[in-house]
Image (cartoon, rainbow, N blue to C red; front, side, top):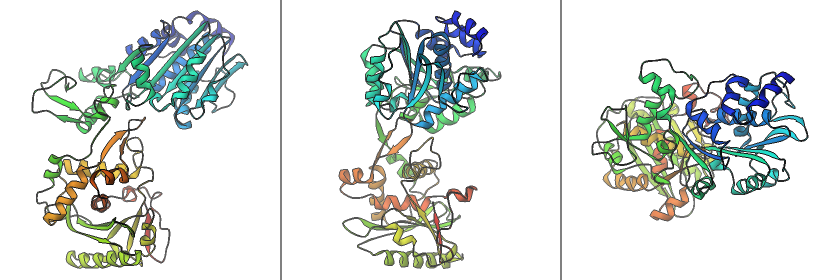
Length: 492
């Protein structure tokens, strides 16, 4: 930073809002201004329960630069659960700082003028990384703070005992079991909630005016998420329900994801059901069997788990069968046989019928026996296609099918009554929770099994049967032949 700017910045030690406007040249939202001002008011510690896409990482970057530029000697330490999340703040820092200098590298998470004046980004892996820093002026910044381990909170607190200090923790309020929730309950912090419903972009667009902050939440996206994450009400609203659009008389009940990622408040429930009775009942109606033919298989070899096989065409489930103790050869042979049977019925090519198989564990032995058929290897533990919404493929599969069913796009009516009842039990049993990034996580299969006394094999085979691979939407990287030319095995 050049000497002229250094001299200017010194005047804003107690006024971060004017610093942002004059030194950085940025316009903040009223909520962002309020949060920065609270950093200068005892106890100088602020918790921000933030909705999605309201500029929380940008705000953290502004706070980091304000402290660094106005406190020399002084230091800033920022952290987040992963390297990627740490760099999100520091990408904003580098953009705001531009070519003023001070970075130790072109993509570094580190600003430094001298050993007693620096700002550094650290990943929340070891609490000891925060120890040993005790300057007179210290600022600690946590991004995605719900995912930051308690030992970092404790280590950070020990640093806030000099002449000047500040602490800023920003997060989606997703998990009440987190230390962030405990910190709020302590009463030792200023607490601010940032709701997407109150963002200036939304207010402006509701008035028919341009959005003043184009990179933040927009009205169309907000309304899409309300429809996705909230339930329209037919009964009288209660506390916590939202009226949208404002003054319209239309009320919605937010689910846990909406509470955390739209409203900036802790979820009413830490977990919830993925399927409901009403959604399952919506699947008990006839639909035309037009569309692609696909088979799903959740293999098992030993114990009381079954190999479950499900056939669907378009939006309609046509057939289900389960077998105990089958070898991988028996399973692969039966899958090829079913492909032939239904291909003849619908006059399509058998080797073109997609057969999605859970490829984890014993499933790999099934997909290795494609023998010219289109076996698709699906690893439920893999990264989701939409990693911002789900941490793994299994969670994504469950929610995608539930959303299709909720839209009336799935029919189980042609399955035998006994299969439908078993499927109902398995689909309604699992719960989900939110991780520290606000993503929906379906509970582990073994947890469901403990509760209902059986593994949800039928449900998993249904999810595989309705799974649409990403490569059909242009993503060739995720699905490549791995055993050509012996068969058409694809990895999902």
